[in-house]
Image (tube, rainbow, N blue to C red; front, side):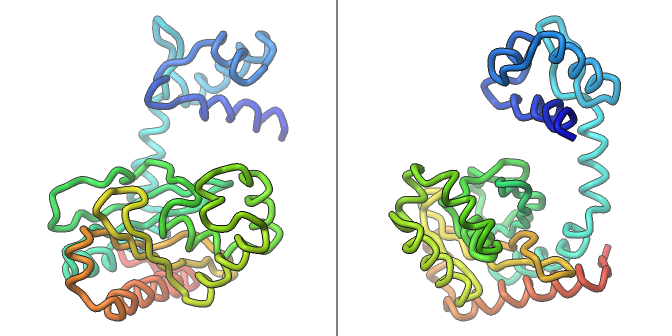
Length: 250
């Protein structure tokens, strides 16, 4: 398992400023022995997760195949698609489904609203753990030991410090969100935009992700916040119920 994790960690090296990697990159950034790096890239290439190029290795075609499968069949997406359409129709805002994996929150489904300005963090882009309504509403529902681990791993992060300079302050801020059942943030990821998020749970009532509405501050202010909160929390509750019943709608 440790060897598999080390091999898959190579995929974390890909980023906008580093679309191609080579064995030297792997060894220098992950500290792997050259023989191990060569073995890992060979195995990842064999299953299509990497592709060999003249300058090194890029993300392979298997990722596109998996993305298509996820888009068409992932339960969280199929349970959410029609509800996002309804949220967009009622508000004109962008609607998002985001999911938690490890310590990363990423948007997996986005329905565009009537506003033409794109979001900085649309589908496929990891989000800061502490700077958005989406991330914070997910953090708030982690188990206490998970939340404490996140805090201890990121205690020096300025964005975490804004939520609470001590563990006690931070956990109290998360408890407030949990009691509300939703979270609002303004201008934290996209200047001039407000986000409103509610949690989605799996069949065992564990936090799975979030549904979020994002719109310009002006559009958001044109609605009663109570109305928007009811929309988003009802959507989250419906998705949670569908997940538990394993009843996708498309």
